[in-house]
Length: 165
Image (cartoon, rainbow, N blue to C red):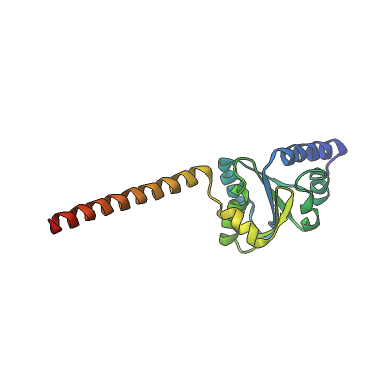
């Protein structure tokens, strides 16, 4: 379907607005992935606050111009699918990484965070970064383990004292 100039301007404007408010972005090549799988991915993304778009490469290049994601321009080729994380920096990277594990044809091409192009190792680190809720749960578990350890230490000290008395 051919896009007229007004539709193209609308698309560029919309993606540019998302680019200016997003925390991080991940791009992938989705060629060979069925529409149903892409729709499932989008559904998961909406729950996580990840905004995704399949846009022509020229329009995407124009949309990310003068944003923190301009560094992604050189990686934009082929069938490009972009995901913007709006709530947590690693949401899009985590979503795409998990999807890539299940779908071998889906390839993450690049990612940007704080205006910097990320390597594949950094993309994996970004994907593994815990959310705020996950970090709180881990912290509480550590506190619980520490408290249990302290209790065991106190009980063993009491036992030793009783044995020596």
